[in-house]
Amino acid sequence: MNQPKFFATKSGDVLAALICGNGSLSCGGQAMEYLNANTSDGATEKHVPVVEMEGGSLKVSVGSAFHPMTKEHSIGWVCLVTRRGWQLRALPVDEDPVAVFTVARDDSPVCVYAWCNLHGLWKTEL
Image (cartoon, rainbow, N blue to C red; front, side, top):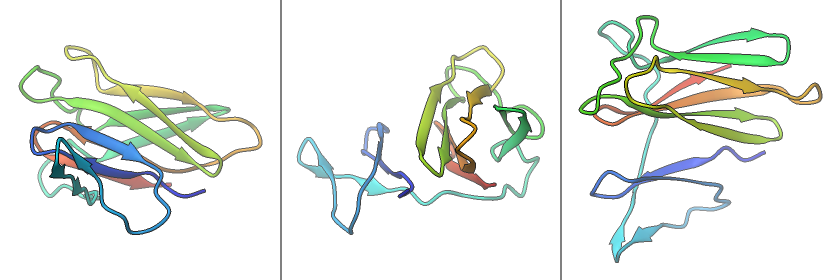
């Protein structure tokens, strides 16, 4: 399974795509920027996804200390990548930055991404 690649527009919109190759994307006539995921946060670890697996459920909390969830600064979504595909959960502002996914018995998690509207893309390998 190819992992999704993430791209951003200059206005801050993010696109997740499965791309086999090195092509480029554009939106409104402007090239989209490929996003490299960060994997560690030198401050208080508020961006790195923290994963707990229990049975067929996978719980993702963003940050070992919860990330802020305000209109001005929040985690917009969490994406789980598995051997067979990927799932994305939007996170509402003013709720804890937590997403729960179901993983099929014949599948297994590979990594988790989280998108912060101010600090970009974050990733945890599983």
